[in-house]
Length: 178
Image 1 (cartoon, rainbow, N blue to C red):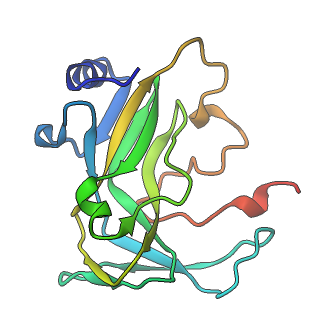
Image 2 (image 1 turned 180 degrees about the vertical axis):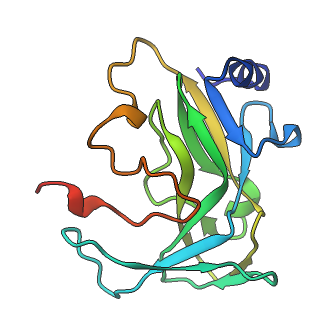
């Protein structure tokens, strides 16, 4: 079951959902709109290695915007810091963003119960497109959890993305054993 706007407001009041900054006008019928943060990044190496810590170059989106190029993976970040303590959050692109040919996540649209951070976006585009800091970029949808939680994400000792950051975070796949 997906939370409705009224249920999202109730959960915010209870403290099980936190969104900072919060703007009531961003609350939809069953989602909350999030915005592109001021930082983007791209990988320095042309070939990425899943067993290696691939370095990124982070930069601030200029006032006049930044043109994303096809064939390159960009990492972005949401302006909003979120905490979700009793629901499964999903981040989906807005249809207006999709209609510009922008994908905001390659595979990682689902968060875990206990996720507390800004969302890193895995951005790719089908043609050149200019993006701006604080433009609407996605929407959070909250799903009800059935059953108790044993292992909240923010309490996991092996969670790779718990460090709070306003910057995009590169892949930590290299921390896995394979």
